[in-house]
Image 1 (cartoon, rainbow, N blue to C red):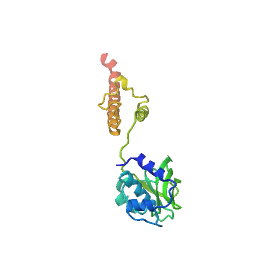
Image 2 (cartoon, helix red, strand yellow; image 1 turned 135 degrees about the vertical axis):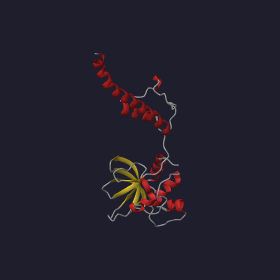
Image 3 (tube, helix red, strand yellow; image 1 turned 120 degrees about the vertical axis):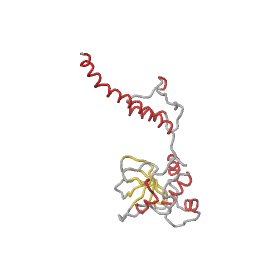
Image 4 (tube, rainbow, N blue to C red; image 1 turned 30 degrees about the horizontal axis):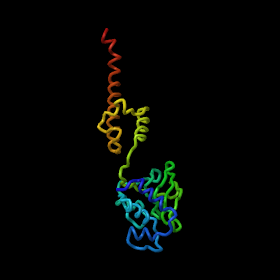
Length: 217
C-alpha cells in the first residue's frame, strides 16, 4: 500500500509533462489520444504507488453522485489534506468537471494542487474552496513513520514538557527506537491515560484533604 509521501513525490515529478497518452496506456491499456486525462492521471498515480483510493481507477471526475463508491472517505472542500484527490464543478450544476490532487494545504480551504490535463499538460494550480471545489476523497494511505521529533511535539502540546526517555518515563514496551506509528500511538495513549488517572485521583483527593481538619476536631 502506498504512502502519502510516495504519491505526492510521484505527482510532483510529473509537473511539466505534456500529453496524457502515457497515463492512458499504463493505467488503462489504451492510447487515449486526444481524450481528457485529469482523472486518468490520478488513477495512474494510485496504481503506480499501490495506493487504495475509493472510486479510482476512473477516467472521469467524481462528485456526490459517486458517494456510493466513495463511502465514508468523502472530504469537504474546506478540510482537504495533501494527498487527497479533489473534484471541481466549473459550471455549478453539481457535477464533477475536473480533478486534481492536493499537494500543499495553506489553511482551511486554501490549497496548491497538482493537476493533470491543464491545457494539455501537468501543472500546479492554486485553489480555494470558493473556486468550485465540490470536495475530495481521503485515500487509505499506509501509515507513515513518526519520528522522535514528532512525538516530542505531541508531548509538548499535551503536557507542556518533552519526554525524557533517560529518566524512566518511557515505561511502555515501545522504546525510543520503536518508531512505528502504531507503537507510538499505543505508547502515547497509555501515557495519557496514566496522566488522566493521576489527575482524577488528585481531584478526588482534594475534598478529603479539605475535610481532614474537621474530622480531626
